[in-house]
Length: 470
Image 1 (cartoon, rainbow, N blue to C red):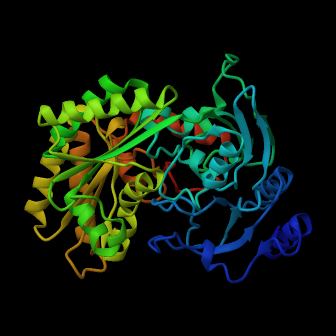
Image 2 (image 1 turned 60 degrees about the vertical axis):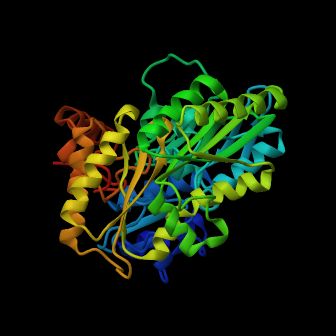
């Protein structure tokens, strides 16, 4: 089947207006404009059957497919290559909430549902869906699952893999695996669900998921605190875990240079005393018990931390609006970086105990190599995930290729030296394929290739992303 016939066939299956072949720019670049490609067409099925028919037709034609949700990723995993031969499969119209099971505390939704809409559907039924990240107003559940997204609540609730009980997946040849079980125990063979989660669209297309719901917290407290060092932040984390236990739901570390960019570009959202301390931490407590008792524990934690000089100052939100403003300061950092100009993002993880050593060693190495750069460090310290970002000098719009390569090599070598991972929650996409090959165990890579060849033997799903085949 030639490309013209393929497009005509897809239009006959999905509808004449749901297969686009012109004006595809919105689907051919990531939201930052860093990764760009050229697609043959964009298919927009609104049912699982439509996805299956699309993949079957593309497989028959030998055409590769790139699945695209909200296109909010940072590693270029949802952008076609520049060949002009790939079909982009958009999940935007797969946006139904299929079922809410109150007794099982699960919500079954389609892959194109916006994360914020899923949160709102859970809240309307009196539950919490805890996945939360800066792009929640535009990212989709399918993309969250494909990248095993983390976000700010991982400390208490885990990554997206921990929040999912079942999947519906279409295979590269168009078969449908109906695995939308809400079971919490099912010991009947290989865990296909967890295999597809985090596979970045290279093994199958996720079309729906059954997600865990949780009771909404009765009491919530948020504080913005100043700490003198990253090591002090870890001491505060230990105190918070001891004092708050399971009610500790957020612990975000932010460096002064990151907050300075927010103050410059979004002054309405700047954090309190953010320019007067090298580091700030945003702590959140979410408790199911008595609000009075929960707040007493929270106040006691901060008092203890002040007495031990682990923190130097603290501001506690006294309303939901104040809490939201504190979170806006944290979540505005990526947008402030984009407004400031040239930046490189490194989503990495190291053992929590090694975070201070990693920051000190990597900061020193980069400043020795490129003194004019700025280090924009923030992260979900409770799970060891740092967004170790590099900002160019004021006025710089880009890094040249040699500088970018040098910076990333220094960062990833330091990650390896500290026993870490080059990707914590954003995935590999196209940006880290070579680094994965360089840093991942050869045995692990060989096993991953075996799985890819077994499930997608013709390499039709998102080829060249996540994994290079020899």
